Length: 239
Image (cartoon, rainbow, N blue to C red; front, side):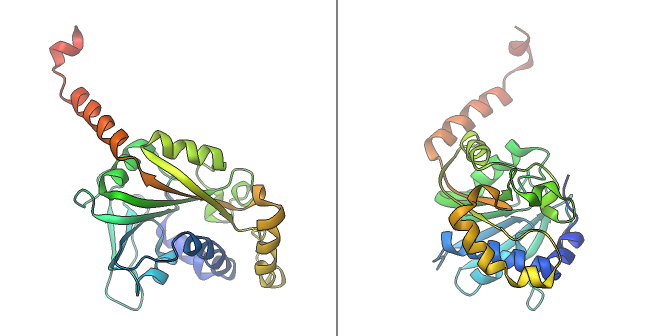
């Protein structure tokens, strides 16, 4: 089930949400240190993590699924957010060099159709980052934050899901070691907790991140088989 965009906006406006954005944003930026000239799409509720790319990338858009709702983004500029079905993206093939998914994979009811659409609009050799709740982390166990909803993933499960949907995972990361508690004292030490967690407690991070690339040949074969099945005459199917 998709989390409402208004609830996501309110979470990221809170003290805990601002820390969350900073901790996850650091990991995303470490994976994508240079996006000059790229066309970037954020899918789900990726808006809090896209702003850092606007001055550098050629184009940055935020697509929010219809069941999630859409909000104006960015707040200080003309709107770059749109609403669409995640299984029918309103873009031509190979439109984006990079796609960032946040609050998307764990919420989707139809994972394969959504990932096929992402594969379609991602450029050949393009990069995808998926951010998902960590099944072993405390954030996935508590419903007080958006990461406590939907289906959490272990790093191995996330990697397998990407491989099964025509992507090649090749880098992973983790973030969010501070507990989901709205304590100013605790949140003020989030940076130190992040450093300790990265070194000693990687398995218990709040979220896992995986960067993947598009499997071009495997994808072409899969699409060919899909089309053949889709246009199989009814009489042949009966036989």
